Image (cartoon, rainbow, N blue to C red; front, side, top):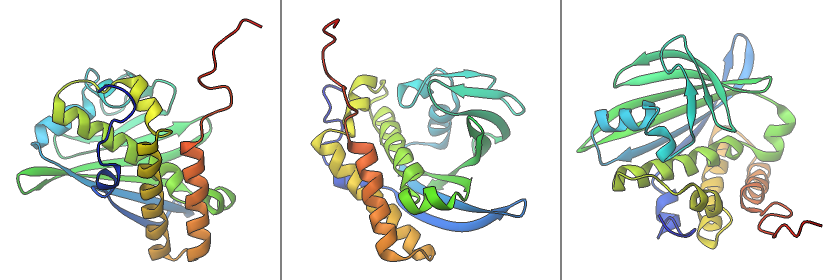
Length: 225
């Protein structure tokens, strides 16, 4: 993958994901559940390998360390870590998603879908009213949209996604179009779940800005001053 234009048709790529939001509870506390579905033109064993093999995960996502077995703990480089809670090869796995003191829960299921395999990703998190009002489900959902694109590129080519190009993608014109479409999709899913429409769409705009704004100083040369 060369350059930042990793997706030739970003709007079509964003449309490959089906999104839903559910209000739920866990241990008596309210949660929000973001659900993303995407079908890949490959078999369950290949998709399972890409999702769970420590050698393949960095080819589309992030380097991972730890014990990738039930009861073991994993750590994604510069991102979340947690506990592997369940694993049923090649159908499903579940793990905690821990960033500092914040704990949420991730489940992935693989389901045959015609000649391919549908990936069903469910991310459940405790409700932080202020954060939800500001960003809505897109805060976590758009991140998974970007990861699922990288997974698709890897599965299609069999090679690793260029980390530098992937990191630059969301601030490129193609990436901005992708993020806008994905964030809008998550907003509509939140509205279907009962969120007020104008607030949900405003949250999507803030999520888009978060993912597509170049950090201050990024790309500037170090002058040594």
